[in-house]
Image (cartoon, rainbow, N blue to C red):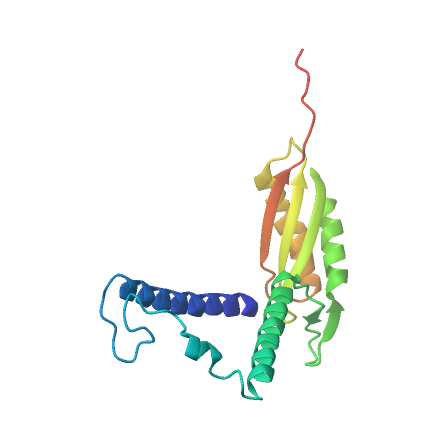
Length: 193
């Protein structure tokens, strides 16, 4: 959830900066007179003059600074990429024991039990459960592959009333929100005689 917010804010800020700078450069290129503080003087001005490009070359701090800034940008980009690509899996769920201390339940254990119980439902060919969220407020993502003859509404009701209700009650959770994706299993065409 937090990474999604960071992504949206970061993309929004980058988009606004690119839109503002690109729009201003386009306006100057089309002949609009720029303000006195703008980096371009008119439509025939270059982005960086030779003097601006070679201004700091002889300074001893220039190249280490450029390399450090570029290395930092590469590290930030790699961190962002790994954070986006890494799937968040909930490591543990906080179970309220009633004594104020609580107990910790392994997330994979709860996923395994949920997967097994969902796979045992009538008409479910395959089930996969993934826990996300916070340890005091877990959420589930459930993928079910249903047999061709199964009504999706019935399968969803059974999943909610049985597997998810058992998991919620056994972990003493006030709620266990679920995102359920249903897919039909592939099957061979049947002969009609």
